[in-house]
Amino acid sequence: MSAHDHDHSELSPMELRVRALETVLSQKGYIDPVALDVLVDTYQTRIGPRNGARVVARAWVDAGYRGWLRRDATAAIASLGYSGRQGEHMVAVENTPARHNMVVCTLCSCYPWPVLGLPPTWYKSAPYRSRAVRDPRGVLADFGVALPESTEIRVWDSTAEVRYLVIPMRPAGTEGLEEAALAALVTRDSMIGTGLPLAPPPRAR
Amino acid sequence: MTYRSHADLGGRPGFGRVTPEPEGELFHAAWEPRVLAMTLAMGATGSWNIDMSRAARETLPDYARLGYYEIWFAALQRQLAECHLVEPDEAAAGRMLHAAPPVARKLMAADVAAVLAKGSPTERPALRQARFKLGQAVRMFAGVVPHHTRLPGYVRGKCGVIARVHGAHVFADAHASGRGEQPHWLYTVVFDGAELWGDTRSQRLKVSVDAWEPYMVAA
Image 1 (cartoon, each protein chain N blue to C red):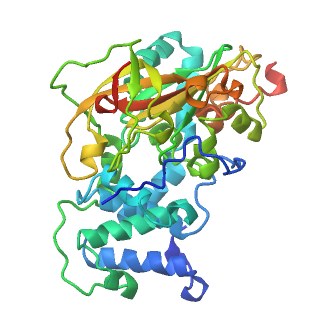
Image 2: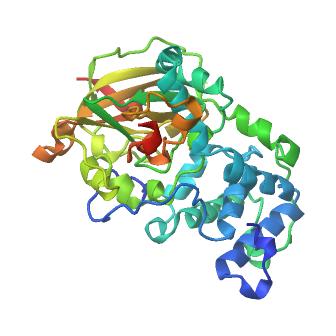
């Protein structure tokens, strides 16, 4: 993924400008270029929504853990090894038949990085940021999700340094599944509140 | 001087549909991850704080027509120039032309994991009692804020209820303008959809923001 893999003649004006700045920062001794590689690799391979899926699956199988998430999500999530930047103050919000939670940052792109990684493009986009607080059912329709009229939609606009993780409802027919198989059903979007977990594979039903 | 944020989008019409994206599709050009990493690495030098970075981004005059990482890149260049760490002629030339003023820290590759795992918690010891308690009705400040703020326009002047009390946190409004941390109590304030939007589409809708004590008065 590094810009340095490409020949100069192929580079766009933006690529050239970014490469130029990186060169200056490196010459001035402000950055370690290898640290930049490590940062990118971290968010491409180690810190992403599979972390959050583990948290959700644990909450589904372990009532004690679910209670800990309610009381102190930061500590409960850290116990699985996920903590730090953009997840310093975590709150877990649980979906129920009566209430569906959805998370947005209308002012920028605040997102719980340790459990979900970097936000998807749509999360940072004007359509989502403008409409999530105004017409969340319309946003859900864009994702192909329709909820019963009786379900309250609860939108959390992360306007400070608290970060929210949605705990979706455990899908029906998953009683026989182990934690790892359950985690595979937990989608990124279901932990933001714009989607639902996947249905279990037929054999598990 | 007036302060104008172009980032306060909550409730504004006309932006169209949301386009879903598969999990794992993080970047759309090779330069984007470099901008992400440069921004994080320069943030780690201690030359500015995250609220200053948000202010630098949201006040870019062409914010609305820039892509996400273009915004990050433009703001990074702006902050580097304002701090005289990288002058515009250096960014244009792609090489160092002036002496390098020292920075407090440099993020080395070996320290990345530890620095990310530590993060930057914003909770601070409370210096006074919280003025509001769970379930209390509050009204949000209704006026114009002449500096960076995290009080979205769509809740200004609206009545809500304290739903969570988060302790005292670094106050973004002060922190963004170099006036220190000035911790204040932080609350989740929840609003009925009808209070915000006044229409039937908003039935069975509740929206909350996280808001510092100076943003509100008892209702």
